[in-house]
Image (cartoon, rainbow, N blue to C red):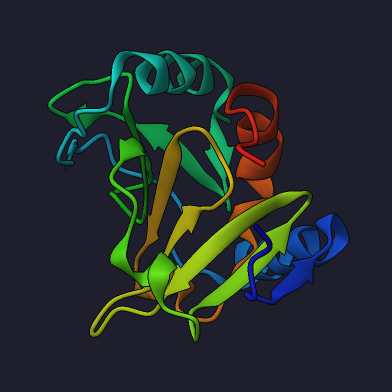
Length: 163
């Protein structure tokens, strides 16, 4: 079955440029050691195995923010900075994926559903993967999809395509 969703393409170079601009202009891009409170998903065993593999591949730094601990600690969650970037693996399929008007983007071979959230930054969820990976960005990234490039390789290597 073919999807009618159209995917914009975000090449690696665009992500690198966006990240470089962010690093050059972001005040105080140093991180804190605070633990970000992150709800832990409850995926099925097969999905959880993909998530554990992904956890091992995640980058130490994204958009100039160092990886930080989540509370509670879990191989299904990760954060960068003071929770500016939060990843959850094994989440439920978002309702927005059933919306024929949903927005999506493609970054280095990984497709993401885009959900704009009121009062904060966007949330992205992988599509066409055997486990759903959710990436929430805070308001610093309201108009910046550059961080997606940092996750494309790890997701592509560890979470198989479902199509």
